[in-house]
Image 1 (cartoon, rainbow, N blue to C red):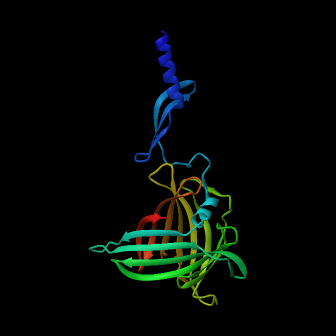
Image 2 (cartoon, rainbow, N blue to C red):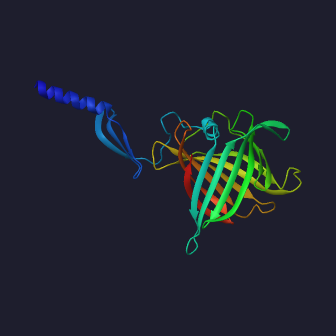
Image 3 (tube, helix red, strand yellow):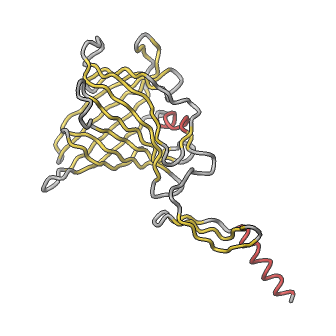
Length: 261
């Protein structure tokens, strides 16, 4: 009788401290024990529609992401291929480097120096450079870009510094006018940016994605070029190394995957 009691006690302790298991391949959550109206059910399996948050803290900490991204020099290497026969192979390398403060639109701003190169089948397509500008002390508020053949001025930035996203959330980030140069006499296009949080194959992480839709002047009824870049992060905004995105190269949208260091 004593041995039986000890065995039951050990079984109860095991059930109390057992861990819920989530299988991302079939979206099934296994819970060791659930009490419903006074009745215990063991090894309950639930099919999950989507993961609502990561880490149980009410969503992803947006305010940490860009501060982490721009805390030091980062290099992203993406690879892609098109639908040609045989497919063309692309490699896109991007380097982000914190720069010196400067004046943009009569305001002192933080800068990030950006270099970008692209190759197709090993041949260099081009190398480009630009500076990204952010409200001083707040990397969540981008105010402009100078380079890549245009001069962009951002507006309508509605992202508070303490916002958080849950998996599946999709929100308006900001918009920009892209001019040919700093005289702002000729508009190249108008861009709208969105931010979304998408589930990765790892239930403990997610992809934070920025999507840019470009609209040419007088051409609002056409499907605009789309550029999308997604960084794998944990709940605290820490970069986990994996990057993917939809990139427009030579007027072709390519799905690219890669890493950031």
